[in-house]
Image (cartoon, rainbow, N blue to C red; front, side, top):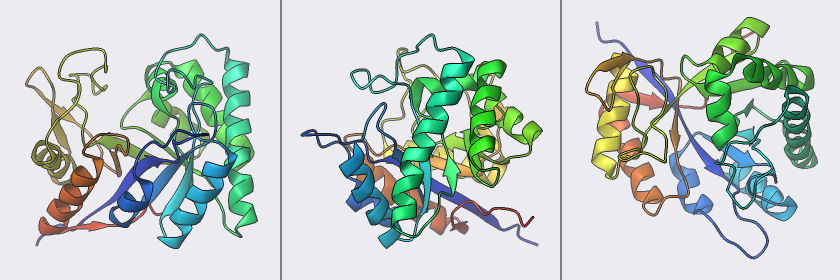
Amino acid sequence: MNRSFTVDLNCDMGESFGAYNLGNDEAILPYITSANIACGFHAGDPAVMRKTVRLALQHQVAIGAHPGLPDLVGFGRREMAVSLEEAFDMIVYQIGALGGFLAAEGSKLHHVKPHGALYNMAAVNAPLAEAIVEAVYRVNPELVLYGLAGSALTKAGTKLGLQVAHEVFADRTYQPDGTLTSRRLPNALLTTPEEAAQQVVRMVKEGKVRSQQGTDVAIQADTICIHGDGAHALEFARHIKQTLQNEGVSLQAFRKATQ
């Protein structure tokens, strides 16, 4: 009997701000099932948030907040020494900001996914992960937490009682401990859609990813991140979606378990 596979395809969006246009949100939306929208700290602004929310609703994709560190110049990809209280506050603030735009459109948030350096810090720093999870839970315990598969963040979310989607990355390489290769190191990114699609299919169907060092790492793939700010983002999105469908994998937003 053939086993059926279902996975969510998510993309980081709404990362333009002011006079600066980043990403190709409108073109990529037809290929994904959930969108993580920047909340104004690492990228985005009120007008972009409103427009991106409306676009995502038009395409019927699940919408999540994508809170980051307050580092517009560094695009939220530089580590900052934030206290646990600061982390809690900035998560609550950014969820509230995007939630307001969804409420104005008669809709609700589906999930929260930290961005960039904050995401990677929380993957290995248990106290920071707990502060982020506490913030999400206190705002709305029904929100889904998107976090790096098997990380301190997903463990903290499960422990507190949040629904957790274990996230894997289509275009990033992995280390033997299941963490992502730092962008500061060589070969951190997969550069062709064929490589990315091959990695994705294996993660979904076999629950494994080949590390940069050549070892297989066990991994849970509930949701796959496709980055929307790369030069070939649209090509990646098209190819990955088509490959998954050809492999018999169903695509849908991460489903919340019934309470």
